[in-house]
Image 1 (cartoon, rainbow, N blue to C red):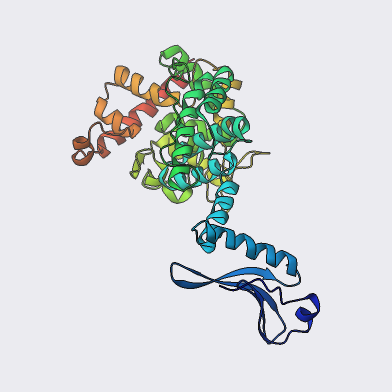
Image 2 (image 1 turned 180 degrees about the vertical axis):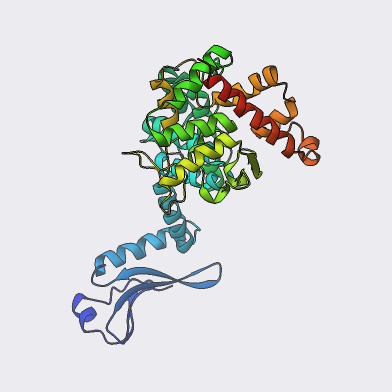
Length: 395
């Protein structure tokens, strides 16, 4: 075994020529032809000769290089490979750096985004950024305890009871992602069942009586902002989800044929959806061509909106301004169609379900029932638009 001779000195290091210059106990200075000076340590582990790098001289001085050598020898005496121990330490440091809750939550959102519909991602991003991150920003997913997680969820529940259950769902997803990516120990599951009191979900408000619908149709017709007015009309005449309407693209719409093809990645069902456009919807969309000017989206953003298209919340805000808060929501156009078209126009429920693009129930039905009722839906939606038109013209 080599002995500690401490052969090198500051002076000998400065004057050293190209080659390897031993200091003792495996430590040596390697000088390159270009003058670079690198600290190395040679050692044997499990019968194999190995090397460790300790840095560059003069950033790492002689005394520090010897300290690193001595530490490596202590690791060897404990039966460990210094190289493996160093790699583990670096990995742990990297893991700790990436395990901050905000970083892990953001990474989880990006991981899930490709497989989610835009509206699903929007909801998850909103709850995560507005509620979970502010409560847990100072925590690490590596060490997050059930107690701390429950405390955060309880606080969220006090201010936003309707979102607390979603927050719990997303928190479980974040910690599961952390386990799968080495940011949290395997099997360290948060016990969150019962952490959030059951919140009674209210029905989305929807106008379903003739008097309210008549008032609603007339109010939308007279709404002063053209872009928002046209978007509300499209939502009312097609019963598509608000997020889909707000982000409608010109390349999806064929005004001559009267069809709107929504790509599967934008749909909750993940399937392409063909929306028949009644003549009233086509008229509203033709009015929006005045705003086209090379734009991708049908409905441009309003002033101070950061989105590339009209923000879906603009539709909700418009309905509130029109006095329908608690009576009718943007999503309520879907319930309005399903209820009123069934009761007043005798539209078959399967035709309405196809128009609403509701997911089929059961694996067998999902696999084999591909019926879209194209012609029947076209007739039904024109009848629906005509019905609303007649209400609008009522004195």
